[in-house]
Amino acid sequence: MGSGKCMSLLTLLSIVWMVMLGKVASQDYGDALSKCILFFEGQRSGKLPSNQRMNWRKDSALRDGSDVGMDLSGGYYDAGDNVKFNFPMAFSTTMLAWSVIEFGQYMGSEQQNALNSIRWAADYLLKSTAVAGKVTAAVGNPNADHNCWERPEDMDTPRTSYVVNQTHPGSEVSAETAAALAASSLAFKSSDQAYSKVLIDRAKEVFDFADKFRGNYKDSVGEGVCPFYCDFSGYLDELVWGAAWLFKVTNEQKYWDFVQNNIAHIPKQVNRIVDGNLQAVNNFAEFGWDNKGAGINVLVSGWVMNSKTADPYVPQANKFMCSMFPESPEKTVSYSPGGLMFKPGGSNMQHATAFSFLLLVYAQYLKKHSGRISCGSFEATPSRLEQVAKGQADYILGKNPLGMSYMVGFSQKFPQRIHHRASSLPSVGGHPGHIKCKDGTPYFQSKNPNPNMLTGAIVGGPDKKDQFPDDRTNAPESEPTTYINAPFVGILAYFKAFPKLPAV
Ligand SMILES: *[C@@H]1O[C@H](CO)[C@@H](O)[C@H](O)[C@H]1NC(C)=O
Image 1 (spheres, rainbow, N blue to C red):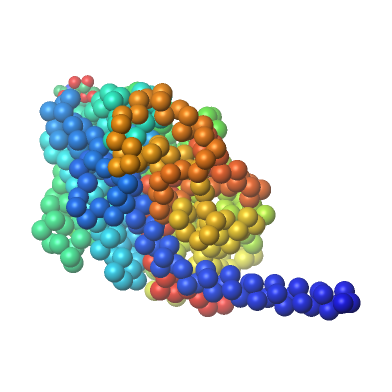
Image 2 (cartoon, rainbow, N blue to C red; image 1 turned 180 degrees about the vertical axis):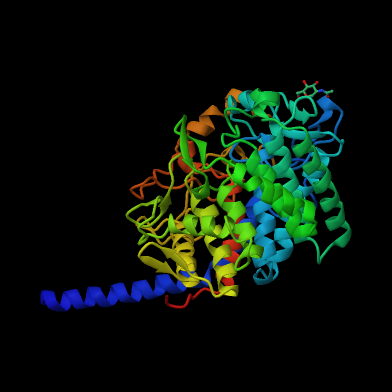
């Protein structure tokens, strides 16, 4: 056989392969959406309901809150550990709710599961704020917890409750909790009005507390939350974010006044932690559990675009978008050779999903107003924003140099050794005997695949060169978190409905 013929056969094969890949990817957003939501069942703390689908997990931490005379059972473990960190949990809840608010109409039968995932957190946040003038910041001594490799069902480390109050305040955790309750209220508005009302009433109270009694929670409950989830960017961004959500839901002038009066006071340069060191970064280009900068601008743009109050929200949101396009002269994020977006710091996938969510939401707002974005010499249409978001989603689901889906249980090839205590230890169902703190170490160190599939979990992801060792001891790359998955729920709902984007 001549080499020419060989080449053409190869070319043909690769075309067939690419078409198949395209087809698989565009058909499976629905499957990915179901799994992305199912993941939250694996993170559940407390008494599991009879309709629990991820049933290798069992009841755990039923007495949480008993040390402070409260019922704080329920909620989500934050990642691969067994601590309930309210600050990132509230942020994940806000993002789940925002996913339903923007894209719930495209979820089909999964919308109910998405609402259930929100309610599981919102019920816990209601418990966390049940006493006026107090907000729970975390449950579970994080140092004791991290020192053990233990199933949540076996936990015997101190379940200390860390609570902020009027003399020891925490405005970031309180205001993010208010944002989560407000956004959840809107998500439930059409399906459960009574619950929606309970949530918004509480959101208002909690916001008042966050605003009136100002302080950083690290100064009040430091060892319970730092260095794990210190708020490096300060709390004013959470207060403005909380007020913006309250305004979106209630339309009450005082919340809009709060946003308008405070937006200019959020520092232009804020701190973020990068490999253990603080680094000054541009506020407009950040979004995650710590920093709400770009999220505020995108959210508020939803009602100020093309109005005389568009400034500074729309210009700043535009600048954020310009920081992401690969062809933009103002690009500040980097991309791996295979096309994954990178920001400094661990658990990179949280940036890829949260930023892609904002791209997708902002694209819808732009479309409504026939808007475009100018990034110096480069002009972006809404479709271009959606393409960038879709590139990230497709990479995560397996269109990458390793052909690896970074979502557990999705596609043929996915991470087998995720950094997750419950997933890596035998299930309590099959192995009811107690496994003590250090008796879990061999399971942590084992090269074997995890015995329990935490379906839908998205891990921190590959390195800058698209390499992924699938190593449980490499937490930044192999640990899932609630705030990676939460924004991805909305993204997958959109691409389930619109798997093929128009050409730009
Ligand atoms: C307020 O919170 C701090 C920190 O959690 C705690 O030490 C203190 O006892 C609390 N005060 C009251 C009155 O609950």
